[in-house]
Amino acid sequence: MRLFHTRSNTQNEVEFVCLEDLVPQDHLLRKIDKYIDFSFIIDKVRPYYSEDNGRPSLDPLVLFKMMFIGYFYGIRSERQLEKEIQMNLAYRWFLGLKISDPVPHHSTISWNRRTRFKDTNIFQDIFDEIVLQAINHQMVGGRVLFTDSTHLKANANKHKFTREEVEVEVRDYVEELNQAIEEDRKQHGKKPLTDREEVKDTKTIRKSKTDPESGFMSRDNKQEMFCYLDHRTTDMKFNIITDAYVTPGNVHDSVPYLERLDRQINRFDLKVEAVALDSGYLTNPICKGLSDRDIFGVIAYRRYHPTKGLFPKWKFKYDKEQDIYICPNGQTLAYSTTSRDGYREYKSNPKQCVGCPLLKECTRSKNHQKVVTRHVWEEHKEKVRENRLSSSGKMLYKYRKEKVERSFADSKELHGLRYCRLRGLHNASEQVLLTAACQNMKKIAIHLSRLG
Image (cartoon, rainbow, N blue to C red; front, side):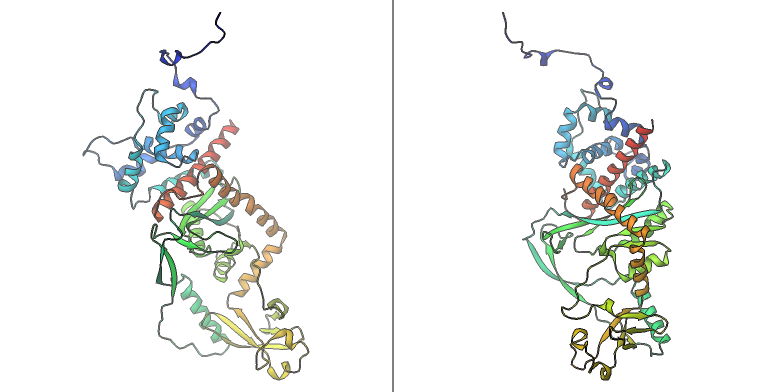
């Protein structure tokens, strides 16, 4: 009597099966296939294909669906993606391949990236179309947005770099700020500032030898590395990602914010009423920009570190009607001038300060004069601080980490976005945009499947 039954011969048996029956009905790819309309891809890529020259190309839908599978399941290697599709019946079903059909070679994806879709906006277009589908399914409210950034480690050795002297980029708001400075000086009876010879500021940066387009990030309590920044915005209603934008890692969070906010408003016709941001966005230009757009801004408090032993600035109360500051001892600091950097200077009377019992806690200047500065756009920042302390502001900021930070966590843990797969800003943007698009597809499909 045989004690064991082995299945050593079953691998060579011929069996008739239906691929449709082998894929579970509740599989994620079934939901994606049912509720996401991919037909727009054909129209988007048509300009990059020839109608009557060369050999027939791989169906663009199959090409992009292969890429989507990689991002859905965090398969970081295209070689591995080819192997996974070879073995996984659900992947074959999603691509429309029979069990016996050969899987498209992994080099097809990289060839299309390097040649056909190089220097195009196809990945941004795909992301935008998925957002539009979410809007059509009423999954985007467009009233409250949350924005933050996270770093993606570049495919580069942090020890292999050169030091280069580069020009400091001129910010978009400089002309507006200069005009505000001149108006402020005029209102205070000051002469216009004389034109000075233009001197371009420079700074020394580390430039990677491996990936020159990445940026070196050096922040407190964070690992030093060459990286890119994923600047992401999510909508409050279903946490749909409405914008994903990549910059080198040495670009400050606040630099691209207003431009990307305007893009979302114009591209998707959003009626934004409020935004919630981290402390990195607490700058005068952003607060002024939100005020100009009539948007309720909630921005986290940035902890300042005043000189030890001296009064912090908040101890000096500003009187808007008289345009003066009042010190803790009740003395007046009168307006003096407005600098080229956009700061009003308020100075105390040294004759009154010299005998003040609080002098040692107020200033260490040799002439016993206290100087307090105030930006010409400071009132907009103060308004944002008031928003943060309001009941609505506290609620919105509480939601911020539950929305945008959760989105980042999903990207890194489930979709392989912790590191850049390829080098270069364009390739990093492709990875971020397609990851975000796939996250949105999952939300759309799962939500609609629950509705039945």
